[in-house]
Length: 420
Image: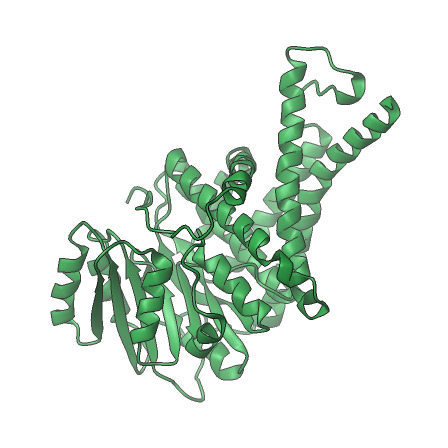
């Protein structure tokens, strides 16, 4: 029995080490292939969008909740889009601040802007659905009410719809505006090395786990086909991504479609955000598992397996930490004894791999943001802060998702938007 226990514990230790190592190299290989296959040839850069065979009109939808401090800048930036024909639909989702009054004022200033007021806070999914239903055009670009869309982003995303009849959504490339603190600087690298790199790799390997809720474009007929966004999911972006792909629609990543966003720069704000992300991913695992059993859904299996394994890894890490804490107070059998959490040779390998991942991703993204390489020196802190945060939020999120009351409406809560 002792030998068996020792083998199990040894296997868990090996898994805790090799899983992030394997995934890091998998993402790097996929991202490098994506770069050489799709990005490298667009040498003119983000400011020189491709010439399209046609320019279908576009509806830009901006769901808003308590965006009084940001909405003027957001709408003004949207009017600068270098695209022939577009409308802007701002949906004020029952904001108790002055968002509604500012939007009414802006609608008098900008002819492209239409404003919808919802009496109560119905949630982002409802706001997006309302904007979609009143929109005039087949193609939609959806951004958050505190995000600044690059003036060529619509053109870059539209090239995918024109070139692919089964393309349902295109996810853009969010860039961090708030970088005055250590957390802000680290997130600049994270959105390149983790989020951007993963989306590139997933696009190569078959399916994308989620579009970016802050900046994505959609085909309206595809949204209608799947019933639009779900009202009860904590993360509407993950849910709509799975809905579309389970109906065999395609989702693509457009690295040139830049959108400058605000992110938390406090541990409290970061915790709330990452807990919501983790809970949303777990809700998707639970909701869509019964639909993944058929052979026709096989292209979604790797995405599901990847996220499920990451959840399992988080609980393995919790178990390892628990053994270490227990060992500080009680004498454990040798197979269960963990003398220290300080990294040994395996920690060095993981650290070097992490820095290599950041170096590759920042090199790729340097074509979109000059001087981004300076962020590299802050990335040494990423494993210490964000890996711990990831494990903790995942562990807490799973029971929250499992015991969430079915049908509960997911409404807005004003997030931490960093220090500008």
